[in-house]
Amino acid sequence: MRLVTTDAIVLRSYNLAESDRIVVCLTRSSGLVRAVAKGARRMKSRFGAALEPFTLIKLSFHERENRDLVTISGAEILKSHFNLSANFESAEVLAYMGEMVAEFAPPHETDERLFRMLTACVEALAQQAGTERPLMRYFEIWLLRLAGLFPDFRACAECGAALSTTATVDAELRSYCENCGPWNASTLAADIINIIRASHQLSPSKFVAEHSLTERQYSEIGDLTHRLITRAIERRPRTLVAANR
Ligand SMILES: [Zn+2]
Image (cartoon, rainbow, N blue to C red; front, side):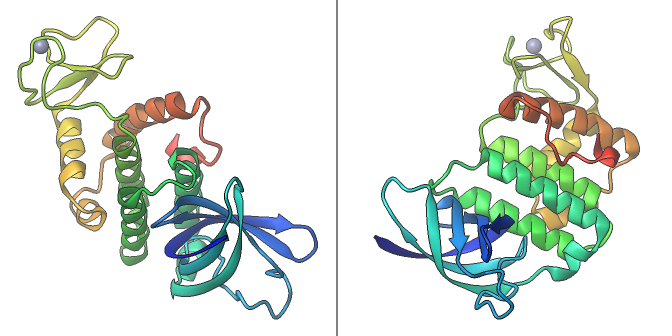
């Protein structure tokens, strides 16, 4: 048994037996971890509020070979986001991000960039009220990008020309210039390409401060990201709420 101590963000938790909880966390050093918090549901639990979803914690657990489920030995709050979960819109976005990260993160495999992206998104949401929608698209683009599943909008897959204004994307996620796109490819307008490029360059807090997204931009980018996500996980996300369909 090896004792691991790492920063972690709680994605979700559910009850186990009479007094325990299972917590799904994205950790900085060990990727996605499922852990048992013994006695977490007792009135005077030593974990207190540390296991609430989207709390940033210093997590200690014992790792065993060939064991998927680890046992938590300590959880100390680094940053609590209690007010976020109290807001309906942000709570929905958090639930969605939690579901998606749990799907995309490889278990017990370090993914520092995913960890940093998720914590930065939660931080941006906490700092700027009313930014749920652009933040959600930013998160989706980066989730796909880090998984190597987001189209590259730099050059046409057919003729190699640099893609400047518009682009079309086919079912295989290749992007083309106006002349080369196959008949069944979907065309993305210049403003959409610009927003996607901006998301690649900016931090989440900068992105949401500069891009409020119109109804059309929000839904057109969503059409692309949801198509890619549904393809990657082979189902539609459960937590994709009505407003974001
Ligand atoms: Zn071309």
